[in-house]
Image 1 (tube, rainbow, N blue to C red):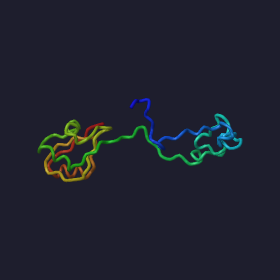
Image 2 (image 1 turned 30 degrees about the vertical axis):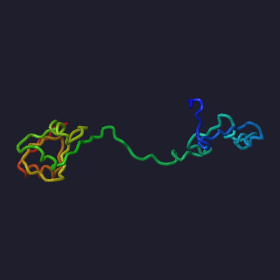
Image 3 (image 1 turned 90 degrees about the vertical axis):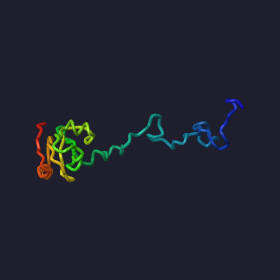
Length: 148
């Protein structure tokens, strides 16, 4: 067996359609393009969304949504996840990053109130929810705001 003798199995490959090769081929004369018109001409393609000169659908519909350039996005951490730290320790942004509790600091860190805190901690963050502040203080800890 040689590489130049290998052929695909019968029925596995199909000959390409040879259009415009005479009337006997069945695909001659108009070469399967029908009669006249823009799509029968060479280079005659129509842009996606073109509606024959009518106002396009994407221009008829109103624009919606807005992404503000000065949006402030906070990395969020729940109070219940702070139990991994030892009692009376200081928890700040660097500590949270090193422990892998937050993925990355965008505009700052916000502490939310889901879960229960069982140890007194000093928590430093950019923002706190009101309920989170209450839970940290109730556990004997302190809350410190960091200016962004």
